[in-house]
Length: 329
Image 1 (tube, rainbow, N blue to C red):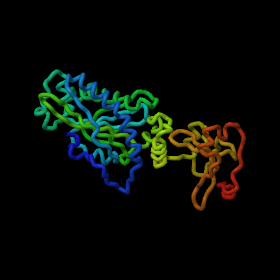
Image 2 (image 1 turned 90 degrees about the vertical axis):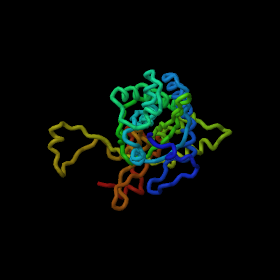
Image 3 (image 1 turned 90 degrees about the horizontal axis):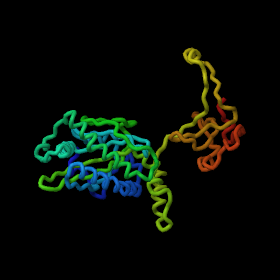
Image 4 (image 1 turned 120 degrees about the vertical axis):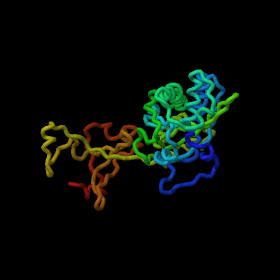
């Protein structure tokens, strides 16, 4: 079993690691749990029809932990899949209880699927791995799109499946995940149960939280907007400062030496661009503060969204007095 049912906490008290604090509040977690009611309905229908079995899927727990911590809890072998979630433009992990997966594969092939035959964990054959991917995980990926149908984006795609736990296709082992765990129960003369879990990177979820809530707040329920805003304000994003670029032949690039000076396609006096997640948010002048490089905001994100400085192309702006005295030469 991927993770024992007893290992999944269902209590309301959650331990907090202050070295890696949670980046998503409980109100936002509830939004994602509610959105995944569609995941449960779609996957229950798909697996029940494909295996000709009575299958119930219910939400068991939600946790926040790093990729590294999550992967360390998984046994080997397991059925761990990497998925590119199109609506989020991010990669997620799906872990399926291997004993449950092998049992469902047997039923997909027309067998009885006796739990006794899959009680002892074993590595699946290449044929079984292919059926797990096409018959079980591909429908799960489609069910994820059902849950995130309020977010515009391309269809999600199954990238691969591994039987040895490892942090596949994610940016870093320390990346924080929101882990949604579900209990899968097969009813009938040969009952069985197991777990399936989805691990989403937290930052993309927070970036699309407003779309999951419909992009608007019900006037009768102002707490919905407060929850969404609170979750976003707690998130940490990578803010970059972009000056410009320079075009040169490969021969000149290969001959660069310490002390060489490069001219950039950036007029003096024109602010640099503030960029987050590939999107320009505002502008700022370069300078220094003490012994560190610094920037002073010229156009904040709110003003940039309604026009910003490039509403009048070519118009240079002078540096604000507070920073101009310390401009880097």
